[in-house]
Amino acid sequence: MHGLVDAPFEVEPVLLDIEELNRRAHDGELELTKLSFGAFGAVGDRYRLLRSGAALGRGVGPLVVAREQRPLAGARIAIPGAETTAFLLLRLAEPELGEVIELRYDRILGAVERGEVDAGLIIHESRFTYADHGLFAVADLGEWWERETGLPVPLAGICARADVEGVEEIEAAIRASVEYAFAHPEASRDYVRAHSQELSDEVCDQHIALYVNEFSVDLGDDGMAAVDALLARSAGTPA
Image (cartoon, rainbow, N blue to C red; front, side, top):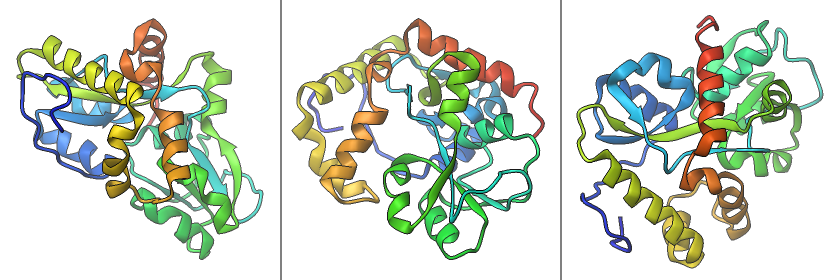
């Protein structure tokens, strides 16, 4: 975006919530897009996964939080979107869900705190701030996934629309961008802060340290195995 690495294309950023990106992928609106792995089934063959730029790892899974410790079965739960990987993991881990309420991810903590829902499924930087709202973690879906499979938790990846050419060059540019960011962490700080929901440097740094890792450079064999395992399980999961 900032011309710091060579790329065979120009970037026009479209900054949207992950669930909005998932929905827009149904119509193939964007040539390159971040996409929840939980949305792959609905998108079908419109997009193909790139090996660079993904979000997955260990200890990175979504959390369910509530005002007090309680079981998930039968709870009225706010979720960040029906096609998010977080909701897919929740359905896999707890088949006996009660009512689910879709909210944009950054509104979930407030809804739980105010008692509008019994619990909330949180993603992104909310995992670093839920305690500030007086909430407790009642389930760690990443821990569940890792116990079940022994694999890292696959959250989202960068995808190219099926008709886009030069995918190898695009992957190389994204990989170079991630590697540059690792080597020069200050280069992206102002841009990150300008678009973050949590403005403290501490939370931004925690977020990046957790979600941007070696799998963001290249999925590798373990990363691909994790994605394949999630997609195989999702195929047998009712909507």
